[in-house]
Image (tube, rainbow, N blue to C red):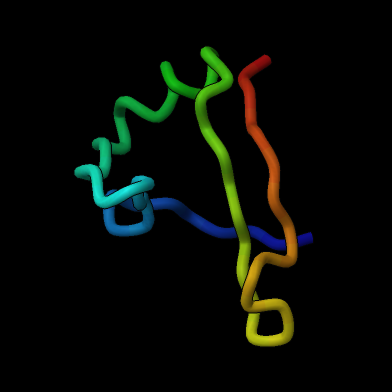
Length: 55
């Protein structure tokens, strides 16, 4: 299991758009508009990718 914290500095947007604030992330999660990509040295194009949602 990997445990990590997210800050505003960790949020990036696509296509050069401005990143959103962390407090807006919850609403986007519930609308299924959040995509996560975890990159590693071994897999620089993405080791884990997918959409996130809320419960």
